[in-house]
Image (cartoon, rainbow, N blue to C red; front, side, top):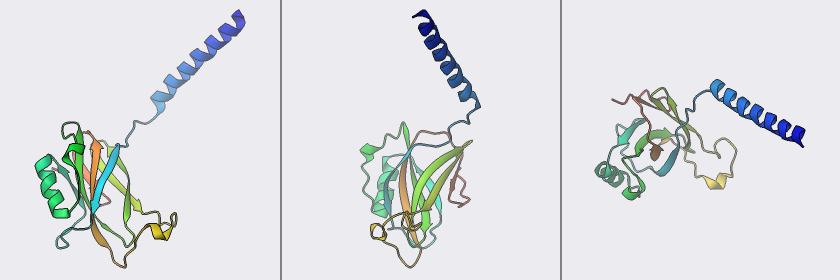
Length: 160
């Protein structure tokens, strides 16, 4: 019985030691938790460019929502603890999906991929594709994160 107890104790200590060692060698987490609250294609076409804007408060959200026609309840965002971004991107004919947001030492990178239908991973009836590229605006809520620049799908936009 004592040998079994010692073996289990030794095994437990080894597992704790290995878990501690593996944490030092791993890279820091760079993904930012996010949620796409809504998206709109009702945007002014003239002068449209890829980029992102931080929405600071309910007044900015109301103005933006009125312009784009999205339906976002300001109660869904805690402006003290979360960030809300208006991310503009010109989509191809089948659109894009926001797949991740990476924090690269203060540079937030909004990473988009083709929608599943465009890459052949979904039923074509699930997504409506157009012949031409169209501008779109995504409203993205994230956890609070310190950043100094934004990068939206190669837009070279810099946040000041």
